[in-house]
Length: 219
Ligand SMILES: [Cu+2]
Image (cartoon, rainbow, N blue to C red):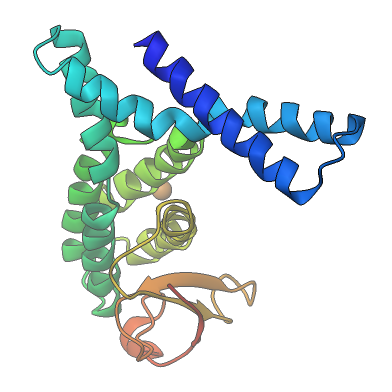
């Protein structure tokens, strides 16, 4: 295995040096510095090949490596789609001034967030995801517990919508989504929400001011 990688590195290094040499036959100290930069970058460049080789060679190997491979698969599969789905149900319940449906959707969203397998999230996004998800869970829980208090549910929607926006920025979305803005909510401080449709339907005022607001961003 090491020999194979070493051979590949050697080949690539030779290729890199050859390219440098073609550019100029004068191998001065600057160029030597360039060459060492190329070499330093090689392990990273080689990693996809390395992984492929490992996967082939160890297909009959230990269960820990099998687990590692399935983690990689899960990481590729992670999507915020189930979170978005529950959020949109909640948001639409508040558009319809339906506090009970909002509470049910809040509970569902809380469960969905709790069921996220952290192993499925790429390691470099763990910390940021955790911070957003903790806040989102608290908002979802309060919305779930406050049927009969729609104004309080809407206060939590304002905070939850920021969390969902952050998740979209962090993980992307395959579904077309809009970030809308209501300038009046919270004593004129304003609030955003995420919508699946371009037409404005304001979840902060519902039937009282259904079309108040505008599209700020498209995802
Ligand atoms: Cu609350």
